[in-house]
Length: 152
Image (cartoon, rainbow, N blue to C red; front, side, top):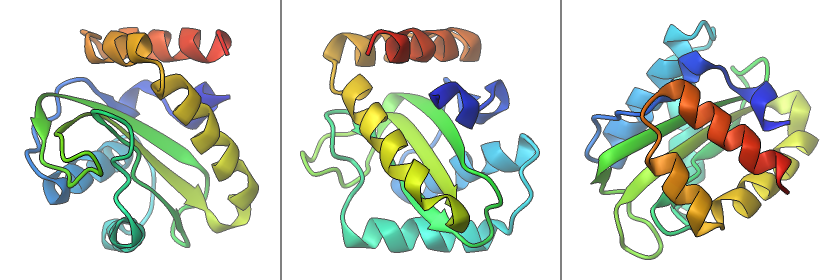
C-alpha cells in the first residue's frame, strides 16, 4: 500500500536541511522535481498550518509532516534521511533524522488515516528505524520500507 504513494524521485537519503522551514521546502521540491504539479506555496501553507496545531515529530527521531491540500490531485509521500539531524521542534525535543512527508488530496480523506496508522506501526519499531536510517541509496530505503510493510 505505502509503495503506491511514492516513487524513487520522492526519496532523498541525504537531506541537507537543518531546520523545519528548510526541510519543508526541500521535501516539497522532491515532489516538484518528481513531476507533481501543484502550487508550492499553497502546499507549504497547508503543511505549516497543520504543523501549527501540533508537532508531527512524534516518534523518536522521526517526523511525519502531513496535510490535506486543495492543490494536491493525488495522495503522495516523500521520504528523507538527515544524517546530521534536523531541529524540528519534536515533542521529545530531539533532532529528526527520518522524515515522511504526506500530501493528501481533499477527495481522498479516508486513505490518510490508514497510511498514518501503517507508518506509525512501522516506525514504532526501532530496528526498522535503524535500517531506514542506514539506507545508503533511495532504492535500498524503498526496499526496506516495502519489507517492513509486508511484515505487518
